[in-house]
Length: 186
Length: 141
Image (cartoon, rainbow over all chains, first blue to last red; front, side, top):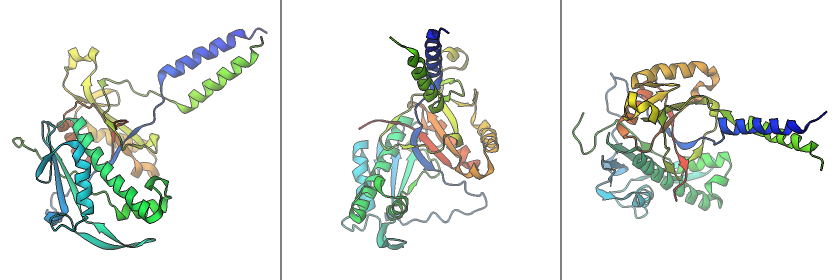
């Protein structure tokens, strides 16, 4: 039997699958939205000490305001790291609380919360860039912590230890109620 | 020269691609250029994922729909009010044990304004679909 055409047919099929399918795995920034507050529920739980919160605002021209100063996106990471670690125990930066973490022991955990606010006119690209910097700041802090505690970067730890590091360096990013920044309210 | 093994090799390749890839399930009606980020994580369970595409309509549909950014769910343009039904239908299609792990991927074009995304996010919160993922490409740096 002549089989020389089989290869050609298989090649055609191969080309067909190459064209019609998507190979790439999905990547992105994972987030958890806060649940919608009940209408009857009073807004009272949102009483966080002023020093423990940093407000990052992005206006409709994609300019960034962190705390009270205008900065560019490349400065944001260091600003957030300084905010979360508070190396000099500055009374204006978040307080730290000693927490007992199972499997590790006592550890100082920052109570800092990053609140991200954007305008309706902010571009998605700028928003993702800011989100990315926030995640990067937290990831670097986690790496530093795990290097100190276990001598390995965060990614190489096993799951239990990763959970410990996550508790020691929490990622508290709040995308609370939408507000218009630097523009008239809707 | 003997080429009898050639077809076997090609078939192997073919099977490899058939197994590792998945069919494009829906046709894109909006142009989505996903923004870049350096700290992206991989999605664990592709089958538990629902997609919300946001962007301006593709060229051939611009005459009909204009260039304003729109939401695409499944195969057609929708508004934020339709997200509730969409999420309910997606939830229904997953097995009961997996429902809590359902993730909504927001695939938005990098030039989209945040207003429309905020609306989508608020609607998702209302449907308590809280696990979301902002699609981003590995890149930057």
